Length: 403
View (cartoon, rainbow, N blue to C red):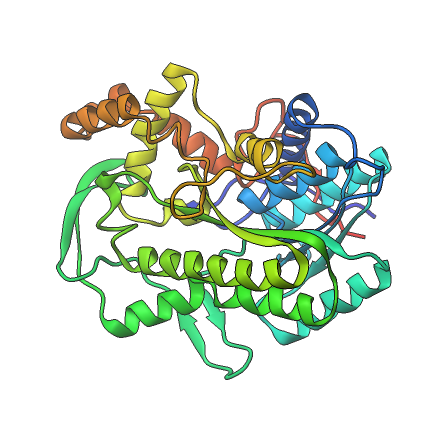
């Protein structure tokens, strides 16, 4: 029997505690429509299906990558995630409902999509994924690494590490938005300790990416020419102290070092390569938790939308595969070997306007100078709320299951 409930959002600051299944399904359908309208619609030359593993496949850039490869290039894909199923009157997590919708759309389109739900950092889930791939009888052409978590347990030692968002060397003071009361406030963040840096690198650096690729390589599950990509962010000088020059920046540097090491290994053994894709700032639960960044994104969205250059995760994923990673394409990289999808965000005219608005913005003029309303709407939409076309007064079935 369906478990019909009316679902209203439960939001505390940068955390949404529930999700709306119909809204999540509508988000997935919109992303698929963007893919079908923008990306290639055929497999690689020769007709052999593209085989893809997406680690962190249920939300954000990972979900968009999954949808782009499956519905844009006819890929057979395996997604890995850690999502909460529905429990009685408690809805499932947004990522769960996203993948339920993705599976339904894939079945309707005759596409092959599978999911493993579990802790991707664990040895057990790695083993389960390897066994699933062995049963395919085909090797992977691409691996997308898009895991995002505040904590990670090292499967070799059992030690759990927690990442922190802190500057290095000195305290950092700047403007931010209090997402609980919509006020522009000054925030001051204490500098990180060496232990903070180490923990953040363990969680957000390239160690787990390397473990995955080594396991896949040792199991002979990577096809000749296999390419892997991990996602990163650089941002403007405005956010450097809390991002690129902070603890997260150290982790991202480690991610880039890992890409170079993986390229050496994959290149020698398979003619493959590893890339870091530096993407633009977008609204995610992770970005909403970083001080300063929600205000920056609100101003950035206003400027980029006015110029017609704004992209969300699906537009970025479509561009990544269309221009760089799809079968037959050679990625274009910067001097550090990174794919740059943040080029439109960091355009000099865009950043000059954002900096001008940053100097002027306050609580009194936040609505006029920024797209904070759009930021809030997009944040709620991540969880299926405030999605156009959904009647939130109608009960919906919470008890939706993945195959």
